[in-house]
Length: 132
Image (cartoon, rainbow, N blue to C red):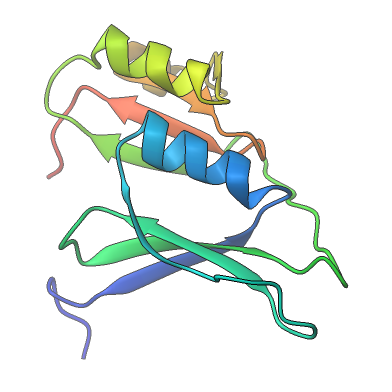
């Protein structure tokens, strides 16, 4: 049964796990929960990031032998509900670590936050609203 305490993993491909790590760890402040230590033929390179002690994480994958190119759309969003206006220092740090600040496809997200594309083109929204 799925409950509010059920853990989730969101997986998606990445062109560059080092760039993804810079953005999500050094930029956003998530923790590395696990990564592959070396290249193993026939296996994916993995980077798992999320909040320390959290119930979810991103699994970013790259298979150099059979790569899958990320194909994000303007509505593939990762929304973080901050409950306050996004800190401009955080937005600057995300840009300094490989992100690109963009206008949102849906004006709701521009009214209530800031949208930053990650190095693979997926969009992170820092929302000023609260969840619920």
